[in-house]
Image (cartoon, rainbow, N blue to C red; front, side, top):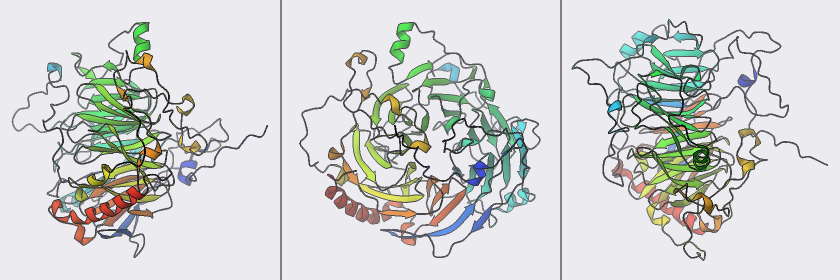
Length: 593
C-alpha cells in the first residue's frame, strides 16, 4: 500500500536551532552583537490613511545552545519541528516617562469590576507604611550562583546611558532562544542591549510588564520558561526571584503569562498541560495538591466540565502559591487575554476552542470553535465588544461577546496566524482597525465597521437553533503540531451533540458556523515583511512594530496624518477604509473559504 510522505515544513528550521552539541562535543559559547539596519525605500506599508515607512530593522543575536545541553535526540526521523521549544521573539514594551498613554474607550457593561479575590480576607493586601519603597526580589541576578542562570552581560556604560536617556523613550524586553535582552529603543545605540541574560537550559517563551507598578526606579517583569520555572525580574536593580521552581506547582512549560489587570502582585500563567495558574510574586511556593478529593462519579462529571477548579481564589489557604489553579482542558493553552472591563478572559487552545470565562467568578460562559485546527492567538477590541482570534485555519475570526456569535472570518493569510492585535489609535465606536501576522511572513491590516456587521446574510436561516448544542472535537485532531499543519487539518464536528452532558455542563457551546452563513472580510493591506515567520505584533501611537522567529524587530513610522493627540480627530480615514471593506464583505459573503 502506498503511503503519502509527511508534509514538508512550511518554514525551514533556522540554523541557530539546528546547531548545538553534536557527537557529544561541547559547543563554545560565542556571543555576537545585535545588528541594526535602516532600509531605504523598502517594505513600506500602503493603507488608506497613507504610507507607513520602515524606520529600522533590529536583528537580535541568537546565542548558541549552552555547552551543558545534551544533544537533542528525536526518535522520529521525519520530524520537522524546531527544537528546543520556542515560540519566537516576543516583545514587552514600557515607557516610564510622559509618553502618551493608549486611548481609552467607553466600555460596554458599565460597572467597575472588583479586584480578583475580593471578599477573601486571606488575600487582603498588606498595609504599607508611608514612604515604604516597593518590594523587590531578593536575589542579585548578576552575582547569582544559580545553575538556572548561565551568565548576565551588562553594558559597560549602562549607568551613564540610564542617566542620559530620554525619559519618554521606550524600553523593550525581548526573548530569543535562551537569551533575554533589555533594550532602550529611545537611544541612538538601540542595538546595544543594556542587559542580556543567558539561561542554562530553559527558554523564555512569554513575558509581561506590570504597568501599575512601573516607575523611574522600578519595573516588575514576569517571564515564563520552557522548563515551567517563572522569573520575577526587576531590571533596574538587577534583582530576581524564581517562582514555581523546578515545577513544584506545575511542571509543564509556561506558554503565556500576564499580570492580572489592576493588581500589583498577582499574575496568571498558562501551562502546556491545560492549566491556568494564578501566582503571587511575593509568596513562597509549596508542592501543590488539589484541595478536593473528588469521588469517581465527580471525576467523570468534571471531565465533561469546561473548567475544573483545583484551587479556588476563595480558598482560605493562601499562605503559599498558587493563589488559584484551574484545569481548562487536556490540551495546550496557546494564549489568553483579559478584557478591558477586567471581568472576562478569552482563552484559545490547541484543540481549536475559544473559551470565554468570567474569571472573577471562576466560570466558563461560552465555548466557540475554529473553522478547523487549533487556535493560536487572541485579543479584545479596545471597547471589549469583540474578540479576534488567529489560528491554524489560516483565518482571523471576529466574535461578538454581547451577541455570543461569530461576526466574520477574515481571509488573507497563507499559513498559520500567530498574532492578532487591535490598533487603538485607529478605533472608535463605529470603526475598528486591527492587524495580524503569521507564519507566511505577512503583516495584514484589517478594517471593519459596526454598520457592516448587521447586514442580512444571503441564506435561508433555519428556525431557532439550539444554542446549547455540544461540540465534540474529533479525537484525531487533539494533538496538532506546527509541522504537520498541511496533513492533519480536521474540521470541528458541528453536527455532534451530547445531551447527556447537559446535567453536568451548563456552559453554552456553539457549533461551527457554516461558511455560507458567515461574512468574509478582506484585508485592506497585505505585505510580506521578511523571510522568516512573524510571531508578534504591536501598535504604538507613532509606529507599528513586529518581531520574527529569527529575531528581526521591525518598526514602521505612521503616516503624519495618522498621528493626533486626540484619536477621535482622525477617525474619518478608517471609516472610509471600513466602508470600502464593507462593500467587499457584502459582495463576498457567499464566497468560498
